Image 1 (spheres, rainbow, N blue to C red):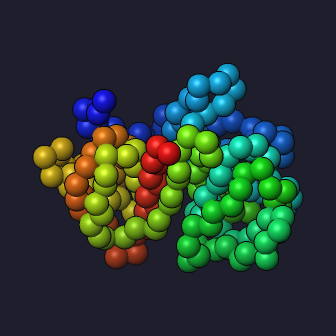
Image 2 (tube, helix red, strand yellow):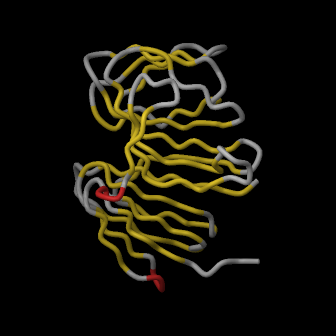
Length: 195
């Protein structure tokens, strides 16, 4: 059964701050979809403030995609992998949420953009955007305006302005959407597909 397409602007003023699972920092939740079991979610999109080097929280049964949103960056050490250097120019990085993971900050605090998905039910992806077109397949998509305001033309579904720091959520929208932003702008597009 398909759902009627909906588009919702999520202003930064409505985001929810909360402590990390390991208590070593804070995250700001942009959006979350509850899961079928108590205490679990299908997916969660958030921005974490990382003030110091240290371990990441463990998310059993989840996958993560992370991108540096502000700051010089970090070296990310995920068990079983080579250390990855992540900065604002690096592509979003995916890794298992239940792997032992820690970071070493390069030059002071950072903020990172996180999509965490329940491995058993959904598949998540994050891509960096500037001014371009993208084709959606009716999945859930969230466009976060990281630097600068963005204009979104969703054809029959209307036109939207996404101010810096806000997020546009699109559910059930299929077809091409056009995204425009400033030359030095940066946005991140998270998509969530049912498995």
